[in-house]
Length: 215
Image (cartoon, rainbow, N blue to C red; front, top):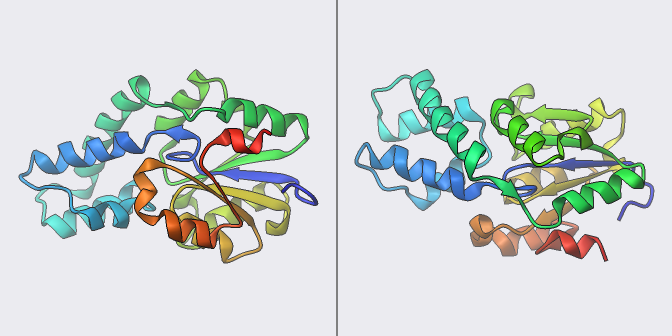
């Protein structure tokens, strides 16, 4: 997989971090307080968005009286507590990162998450320093349905897309990375099971556990 490739670009939520359940609970609590259930297509719509665009979408869809900044602040407060107490690594993540490090593979993050949330979590689990680069969807023009955030991560690593492997758990992320010359590994997550077949068809490789890459 890494023949002629020098870089690895990782999504965080649902890929390295077992955190997608946290976001589902936040959606349920946030909308539940306002008398709404969480529509399944809502989860699909906001998964690849960063905070601001997700807040704009949520405000417009549910006609909420709160400002976008008020919505973001409430989400962030809820997420901060959960990331500090409930979010862990997926099994095998640390060992896999250690293996890549020993092989001289340079590593980056490409995420729609907020650094104030994920940085303490990665540091707590001892994997923050594996990454040379942290790239966010808000750093680029388009979200994870497009290659922009992965291209930016590769650029910051001083590598070409064809020299990098991207790891993603959602279909939009896989599709976006495949728009360029990245090798893409789909990573199974229970919260993206509804699009598993499409991820498997689109990705260059699909794994159900990180241990599959350690054999």
